[in-house]
Image 1 (cartoon, rainbow, N blue to C red):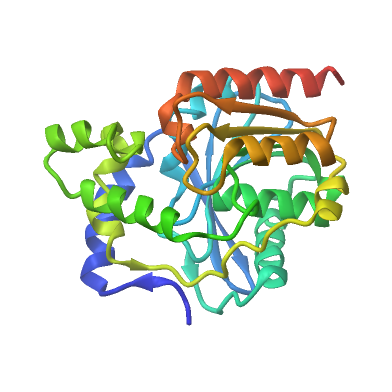
Image 2 (image 1 turned 30 degrees about the vertical axis):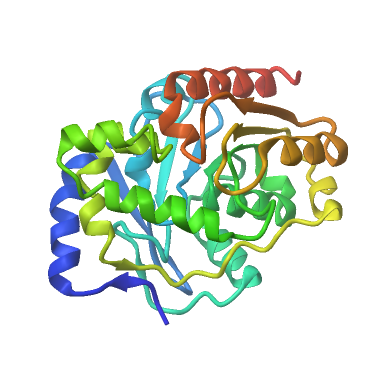
Amino acid sequence: MNSSFTTPAARERFLAAYRPALAPFPSSTPIRTPFGTAVAHHGGTGTGTPVVLLSGAGGNAVAWHRYVAPLGRDHPVVALDLIGEPGLAEQTRPITGTAEAVECLTATLDGLDTPRMHLVGMSYGGWAALRYAIAAPSRVASVTLLDPAGFGRVTAGFMVWLIAGGLAGLAPRGLRHRLAGPVRNATLRDDHLAAMLPSLMRFRRRIPAPAVFTDEELASVTAPAMFLLGEHSALYPAADAAARLESVMPAARVEIIRGASHDVPTYAPELVAERMTNFLESVHHGQ
């Protein structure tokens, strides 16, 4: 089955909140693929190698609204509404496994007509970016992964974290902000994103679970890579993931963001943006 909103009215309520939130992206381009139509949202004024942003499960281009300005000073910025996720994308064919997930992303990135790109992904988007870096190394200038999936099975603890954040997102603004600490989800303090949370509760996502990376797959990554992991990640013990990465990908930069959970991009946006811009600069200079 394809991902979709539960009713046409639910989709319209989502779009009413979503379209105004796309203000950081002056233009958008549809990308037709065998799985449906993705949408690329364009921002930034730089002329360097494009930076392509992949959101996490249940996310979309607006998840990156804080990052367009700092990344866009030196690079064109492209934030994707991915097929199977809530946004302006439309899905027409099911995505049934890892191979088809990579095929769908490949078709989407091919539609950008960009021979080489920096890929940035959070959570499920990080998993997809790393899968693509393995499949198409010549296209990837670097990969930046923010608490990426694929380093352990999705657990009941993660589902509890996800549901708790969703329910807290339905609370009035003041209470929602206060709940961000106890549920370890700083997204609840981001009013730009929180406006869409009630509508997202009515989206049914039907995308394959992220397959766990093998050591051989990780060791095969040739692009410069940076991993920013949440100290209290709901996906996996961050220290264990960091130790594994340092063992099988010794050239990668790996940092644990203190205090963060799986909410790395919203927990410390200034810090994350600084790490990202510095990393891209070092890649540019071949360091």
